[in-house]
Length: 315
Ligand SMILES: Cc1cc2nc3c(=O)[nH]c(=O)nc-3n(C[C@H](O)[C@H](O)[C@H](O)COP(=O)(O)OP(=O)(O)OC[C@H]3O[C@@H](n4cnc5c(N)ncnc54)[C@H](O)[C@@H]3O)c2cc1C
Image (tube, rainbow, N blue to C red; front, top):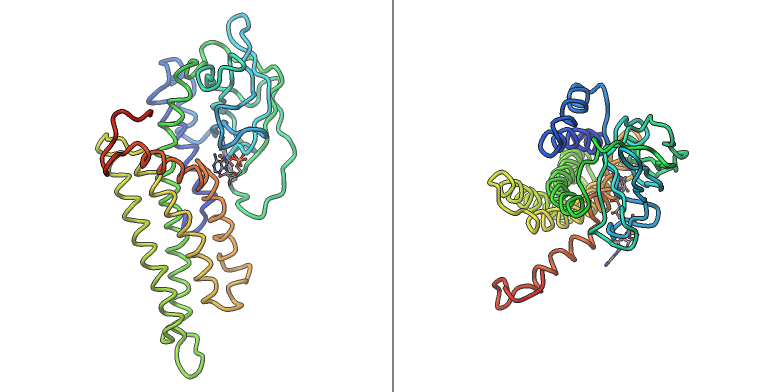
């Protein structure tokens, strides 16, 4: 799907992922009340961690969950909510004890048509409009105890577990936009001639596309390797960071190289190169930035001694 449109694939994948999470982690009442309408597509779900003041440093979120009779009242502003423009339900992360960092964060299933929820005006983006990223303001929104999804102490941990799978999905999507760009650049290179021969017969251009093909194969291998760890029930945190880091960089350089091979035609708005380029930028941010992936990989290296895990190092 991402070969055609990464942003809509991402939005759909996120909505499906929320249904899976409710099925796996939700209470009996949450599964009964929320799952059927999400599965049949009647309602759309979103996941809301980021805020205007906290992105990579998720433990610094300021949205506050205040205790109220029979539930909680949520106050704060959430940013970059994928599907947020149209979503009916969001998994919202909020701080229950200001100043307590990750330990105080809980997550809640919030009805986005409830009193006190408003969606801020769209911020114009350079692309990726199908993601429907929105800013959502929560002004004392009431959430019943029944819709507490993960209590303080568990929500942060569970969010990090969920994000591992999401990183592998994004890595696969990055492979999709490069596969489409490469196929188009190769087709063009076969039919377009310069200096008496097809473009693809010129070594400079051919080598450039060969490098894209190698990057794509490597990214696919890392993606499948991480996915196989998940399928086998093994810890895929590090494998997912490797896959997403590599695929994100590969997509940025790969799409640009394919676009270059098209000549000026690559700029045509009816061809997908510009959209793919914007999508490659999105890949570099969503579900953890490229720097955060490097940080995760670096933290693992720091824990090792002589190439092996160091059991004494802090985790
Ligand atoms: C299209 C789109 C859709 C999104 N969808 C969602 C969604 O559905 N739900 C949701 O909760 N969030 C969503 N996000 C938010 C996304 O997760 C954040 O953009 C991301 O976590 C980075 O946060 P930030 O943009 O605030 O950047 P910041 O955290 O402010 O970082 C800015 C830059 O500094 C770098 N940086 C920060 N800290 C460090 C460090 N310690 N070392 C080195 N570099 C560092 C970052 O890598 C980045 O390059 C979405 C974002 C986009 C663009």
